[in-house]
Image (cartoon, rainbow over all chains, first blue to last red):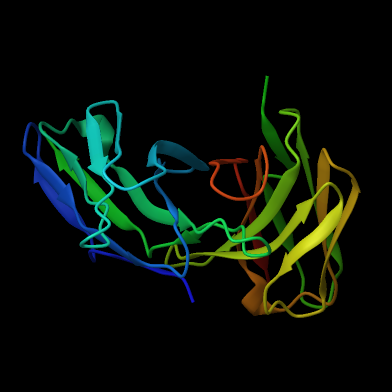
Length: 114
Length: 113
């Protein structure tokens, strides 16, 4: 079955530090890949996505590249801010009929300190 | 305007009670979902509906029954609530099945005492 593995948290960084949150996946088909963010007390918001190999998703300074050869979709940001503190979820949809559901990783809690 | 709205936001109830959570989306999407988030933030799908038809039913106790009166609504009814049902339940919708992002509601925090 499909699965998503992302790095264990929590992750604590100083403001303006470089961020990487690792994500690897296993899927039977050709999945679309997503990063969702959950701010405290809120629902999930789509951060970025990539639908095919070598696509790069980007939003709000965050980037992730769909790497089929390494089955990875690592999230990066060059300079984090306090407002980036949240839980980040890597997810996939493999698109096969009858299995159209988001499979999530376990989430990585990110805290940015001033 | 709220895209995916669910009510109530908080629900505290006693064991053995029956409760419902309502969800509505105004995005014109065909597919709706219910996800459960446990205390460790782990998210797992429970159900998905496409145009009022059940597509996915994960291994969820049959005390949980989704109902979709039309494609803009997907309600979740829970019978005989148990302590282990305490979690945050998220409704979501997507334009169609497969490959497209989902839009999530704010969540319903259910506490069973």
